[in-house]
Length: 362
Image 1: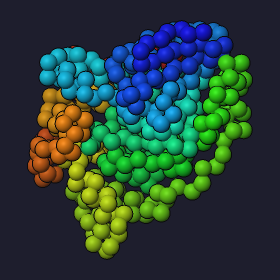
Image 2: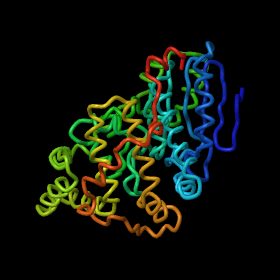
Image 3: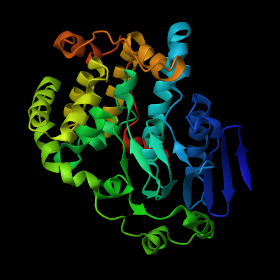
Image 4: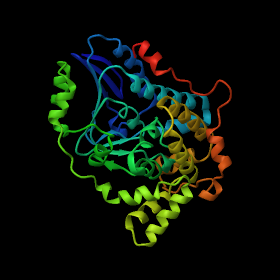
């Protein structure tokens, strides 16, 4: 039974299962504000439905779960309707928090790219299933933003500074790496997904179902560079990280040189606010991380690099963003401090406590 259908997202009830299907296929399921609103409206209602066993997130596009958020609409609003842009970020982070606090099993069936906002609706699922083509990335530093949707809470806790590496570079990893890091819980080929959905509609227990279908994805290719990542990304300044990578590259380490090349194309401001957010997130709750994300997002909307990065990557597509400041030296501590400073009175994002969310039967 179809509960609600929109042009870009469908919410389908099938027995004990609710399926949330992303179907904005021509845009690789880039999540719009309207798509997130449809999901956010459904989640509390489903939480209180005694006949519901599980929610499954899936994509109608076999090549991509989600390419991220529709950032073009955000930069358009930032110019003409800044309050609308700020509200869009706030609503997204509220949805992330609702999913984190949700009281029933949630599952994402992923194949292809899972990026940005797509990570935000899957990372907090209790069961995260990766197909053979799965690719995880938080590429926001390439567009003058930062890894948001609360991702720094998880990334900052990954071993060996791999999370710092992923956050700063925006590089992608496949399912073997994601499974080794705990970003996904199961590796199951997409051909099995219809059978999984059918079983869950009959309320079959999710853990043995997925455990029986899971297959070892093999060794992580990133493990070959674990020592270099741990050493180079352990610093508390981006300049220090770059210096260690430069030293490794001088010793003919091709991986280090490639990472340096990537960092050289990223927004210097984004790199610095991302590193600070990663370091702070290690000691922060998920709720507080999302509140900080909102401060940073509002400041990015007011600044230069987010609009410029989106222009260069997605509008004009010239691949030549003119960052300002143009280099790391120009991004002073005072500039970074302003990103993290409280918003004007009454404007910071305040989320309900986990206890209050559970009391409300979310």
